[in-house]
Length: 227
Image (tube, rainbow, N blue to C red; front, side, top):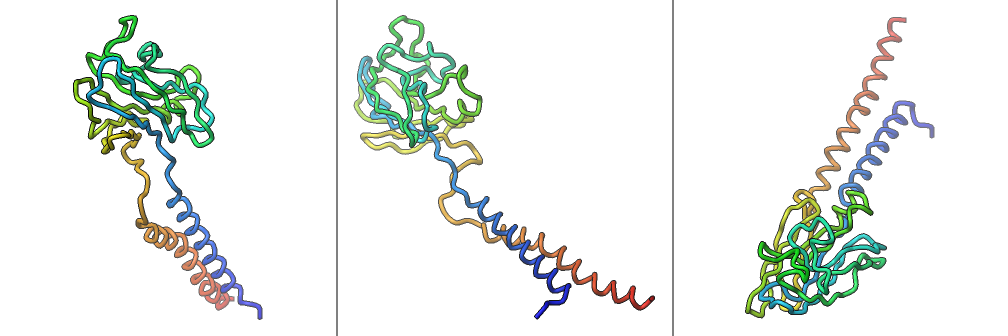
């Protein structure tokens, strides 16, 4: 059976609306990209010259020149980091993970150029001269460390995001994690209001077409009456 022309148009409009609604769901529910994290064995009560370990995850895969180690806060150049046993360049594997480094933490650099009087961090960052601004920002993270005579770990290590925002998260006795979590870019943790988005946008796309299909036959009948 051949459907009347106006019913075929109505079916086409419904199909178009459903396709747009499905596209909205696929875009809206796509998972957030992993944020870079530093896993630091100790972040507080560190003695001058003490060794700690650190490794990173969530970075861009295949990097060969990611600077990782002890630096002053918000390092801008390589000299802002402790290059004598406290920092080095590392690579990332296919999953964006670095090797584990053993760092010798110092209150001041061996050449005396930098000190931790105003605070130091364990940081990871690409050199701006060899990468785009987007890659540098997306692979930048740091965790605050503190010197002292204690022997524990910080309960709230600071994570600097790719947009220089900060957040805190709990640490265990063996691992403190930092994550970059910019405002408005938090990963989804469960189902939200996707269905409402689908209904609203699908209806907005569908209703004008349905209304047009309803009006056209009536207009044709009126025009035929004048002939």
